[in-house]
Amino acid sequence: MAFEPKMGLTQGLRQSLVITPQLKQAIKILQLAQVDLAQLMAEEAEQNPTLEVLDAGEEEVDVEAGAATAEERMQELHDPTAEDQPPAGDESAAEIAPESSTLGEINWEEYLSDWAANSTQGSMSAGGGSDWDEDRRPSVENTLSRASTLADHLTWQLRMGEFAPEERAIGDILVGNADDNGYLRLSLEDAAFEAGADVGTVERVLARMQEFEPAGVLARDLRECLLIQLRQRGEGEGVAASIVRDHLQLLEAKRFDRLARELGVEPDEVARASALIASLEPKPGRDFASQDVRYVVPDVFVEKMDGEWVVLLNDDGMPRLRVSNAYRRMLSDEDGSAEAKNYIREKLSAAQWLIRSIQQRQSTLFKVTSSIVRFQRDFLDQGVKALRPLRLKDVAEDIGMHESTVSRATANKWVHTPQGTLELKYFFTSSIRSSDGDDLSAESVKEQIRGIIEAEDPRKPFSDQHIAQVLAGSNVEIARRTVAKYREIMGILPSSKRRQLA
Image 1 (cartoon, rainbow, N blue to C red):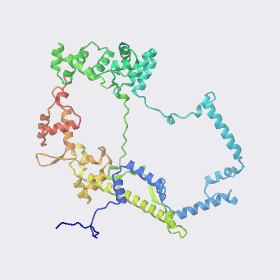
Image 2 (spheres, rainbow, N blue to C red; image 1 turned 90 degrees about the vertical axis):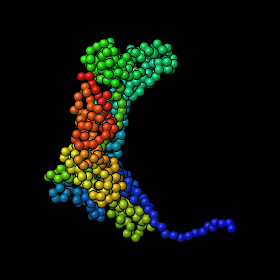
Image 3 (cartoon, rainbow, N blue to C red; image 1 turned 60 degrees about the horizontal axis):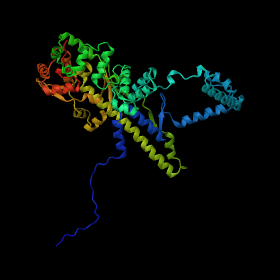
Image 4 (tube, helix red, strand yellow; image 1 turned 90 degrees about the horizontal axis):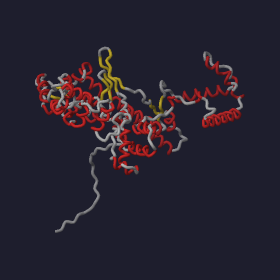
């Protein structure tokens, strides 16, 4: 017997998690940094007419009382009997009243026509330059400027030099093919083909331009860059030049003994040449590289007051929002249309939810930071060496919240402490078990490794295995490969690259 499927409708109940738009907004607000939150609040205030932004120092007052006061002020201004009767004790009004009474006598049409004529004359003088008033020029602070790039600097030197027109055309091609580090990324043959010139001419122009500032610019590789700088320092034929020209790999490997044998010189001379080479700039265009500066605004301040650590939220620059009372009264207005009331009701609900979400965000951030301070008191007093391991779970259990909430509350947040301005995520580090049973923070172990390396003899740097043995003497059991990993994270070279001859 064949099975015949049937289609139909059935009713049932089931539970499911649904994230509402309001909840999504609350989660987003919780993760925002202070600067981003201030921008979001300003945008919401522009889009939602029921939100009002309080001015600095302004208190929440009754809108009806404010309107009545404004009405009385307008009546006083239009009341001729009150023109010469300023309020008692109001000296500023007494001084302004006589001047304000003469405003009606001004011929505004004549004034505006004179102003337009003067403006036109001023703009014409500015264009001609002969009658331009020096006092009317914009100040230096209001003048836009642009940072000079490496290409601008090289082009300026090319124009100031004694180059023929065809040589300048070649120079423009060479400048246009220099990378951010100042190296030429175009072969002489390709440059000659693009300029319609012979390779010899391009080579002569390049040789002259390689004397430009910064020293070593337009080199084709590191060796040529260093040789150009040595030549400009008068060291073009010394031991340093020989090392750069023929033994750069031995120098990189710190094989000073072999370098001395290869060059037939004393080790001290190799040491002086190595120090000279180390003082050269391997990236001539570094100073002209444009880098975006990242400004950090702390969300929280942690300060010590009367022997206790205090957590202070940073609300500087954040707009103060409130729900408009005027729109609330419109809902009770019997003459209003249903469509308008529905719109106002929707906007009021969104405004109230936004303010509530911001308050919840501030409260959660305060609780999380206070919990971190309780766990990391020793760090605040003593520094990185006293930083203890901490997990999101520890803080979540301390304040009675979920780990995901703590993770969102600490995301993109910065705290200013006596030990510096740090990310809140910085305080959550993995633990390393010491031989005496205590847990150590990975950051404190890194700091110990840095201190051991800084105290080493540069002529005999410590190996990773030796550093692990030194840490073991301090009851820190750590493997050699872990030492190497932490060293690489801190940007410290291995012992073979740290060794110096003197």
